[in-house]
Amino acid sequence: MATIATAKPYPYEFPQAGFALLMIDMQRDFIEPGGFGSALGNDVSRLAAILPAAARLVAGFRRAGRDVLHTKEAHRPDLSDCPPAKLRRGGGALRIGDDGPMGRILIDGEPGSDFVAALSPAAGEPVIAKPGKGAFFATPLERLLRERGITHLAIGGVTTEVCVQTTMREANDRGYECVLVEDATESYFPAFKQATLDMIRAQGAIVGWTATVDEVLAALEAP
Ligand code: C5J
Image (cartoon, rainbow, N blue to C red; front, side):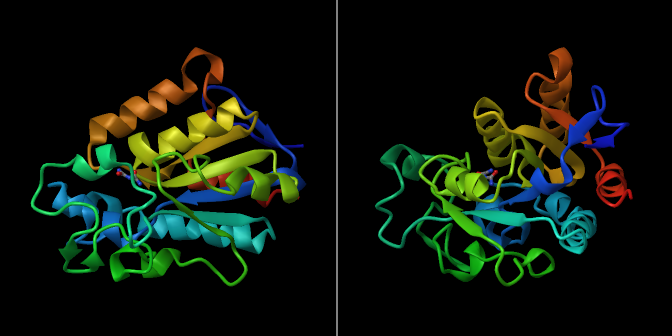
């Protein structure tokens, strides 16, 4: 077993072979102006600021020969996988499925639903399109993890308190040991990010652990 000794709230142990990286929704729709995030009135520049750290994390997992999996929140063009309740939300000028500056908002295959260039999946890396906030809902993610023998997950991506936290809680309930990589995740709301980090590692890692990119990579690359 390898160990992230400085993880919070106490050292995080992982088997090198069963440890993978799950990157959540590093899409233009959330990170670039003109997408879903900005249509909801958010300042997307906060999210763009983590791109160098997130890219360093992904590169480290690839270097170590570990699996990297990517999710994207994206609906079918006919919106048949989007519950009416989700479609109605927002109250902004643009809603899911509407035409925006980067194509139809949150629709799979549109420019906005694509990954930001710095976090593009490499050839062969699984990409899981998800209709919900959690990556286990209505997706093949659990089967993919099981097939690969993955038991431990480092999780990064956006946004911390929505899709990242929902996915981490889903993973925790399914028995995965998860560490949230704190400088490779971001929220439009600094207080929500901080609250998520605090909630996850409270009560003796009730949902999981947190650690920085440097701490995760140092443990991953330790001899
Ligand atoms: C949101 C996400 N915030 N990827 N999606 O709607 O966190």
